[in-house]
Image (tube, rainbow, N blue to C red; front, side, top):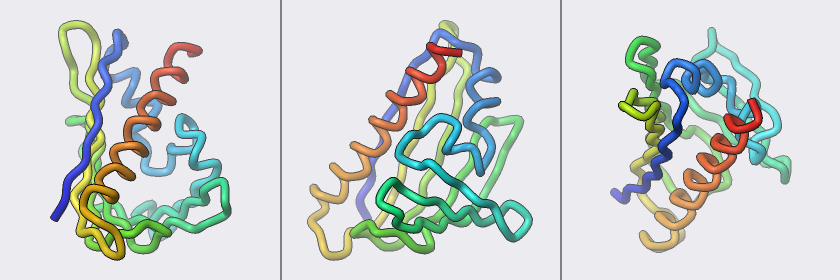
Length: 137
């Protein structure tokens, strides 16, 4: 298994950040890479579209509104990995909040280093987009 993660500190209360990113279908609200998200099976499955039109299907594994976190698994995606599980957490800090996006996965058709770089890039750019979104709100 390989792991990747990224963190972001914001001078914004954790509850405010969670209100934007805490919904399992909310990725299009803050992540430009995902322009569309459709929930099904009572909100437990999300079908995403990336700018290339590739489908990404993910299953919600755990959701903790009070703890401001959720975990999910990829069921289908154009990524060179299998057994992908990820978590998104919003933690309260003295200065505001800290967002942690992390994942574990098994590379398939790519090296560990390439798969890790791919997801660290997705997480880092995603959190940069979140920071820009929070600055404009």
